[in-house]
Structures are given as C-alpha cells and as structure tokens.
Length: 152
Image 1 (cartoon, rainbow, N blue to C red):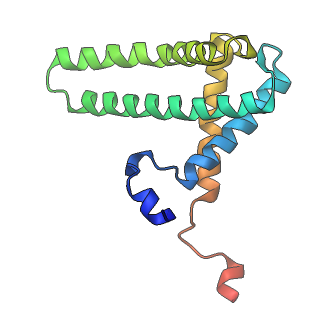
Image 2 (image 1 turned 120 degrees about the horizontal axis):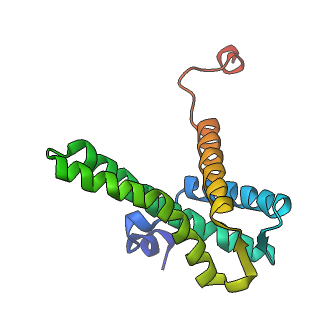
C-alpha cells in the first residue's frame, strides 16, 4: 500500500497539518518554560511533557471552536433570550475550559503531570495562545517582498 493510497481513507479533518506540528512545538516550549519557572507545574519526563502539549493542542482547538460557534450564535441571535443564553454559555465556558484542561490532564496522566491550580492554568493558556499567535504571525507569508528578495 503506497503512501497516497493509504492517506486516502483518512478523514481530511483529522489529518495533521504543519501548523499543528508547529503549535505542538510551541506548546512544548512554553510548557517546558512553565515547568522550569513555576514549582507547581510538573511533568516527570520529556515524553509526558510532549504528550501534555499534544493534549493541550487538541483541547484548546476544541474549546476555540466551541467559543467561536458561541460567539457566532451570539451575533446572529435575534431575541434577548437567545443572546442571554449565549452570553451565559460564554461566561461559563471561559473559566470552565480551564477546569476541563486541569481535569483531563489529571485523568490522563495522574500525578505524573500537574499544571498547578486554576490561576496557573489560566496564565498557561493565555501564554500558549499568545505564543501560538506570535509564531503563526512570524511564519505567515509576507504580502510585500523583502529588500533582499527584490534585489535578486
């Protein structure tokens, strides 16, 4: 079975893109920095830190999709009740997502990985999101050519 025929059965949405790998690498670097800087953030090995970064990538992508869908429903809401329900969903989702991350990591890795408490995870998620955006902005193709490229 060749690589092209093997990849044909794999659902398109489940394929790993280069940006997904970059995100995991960014998450791993940020998580490693948190492990070094904050005593409450613990991963017993590099492999556990890598697996934690993969889990964080998956969970954060799912939560981001849910948040975007909720905001879209909020903007499209025509009644006050629909707006109130969507606002309540966002208010519960924002802090609730941090508890989801904490509990999922505890469930998957037990005492081998700890992300600290609610505030440490909140800071971690904010820094992960900022680092991801910064790296994606740095890697995005530029619309204007650089001077070195124009001279060639």
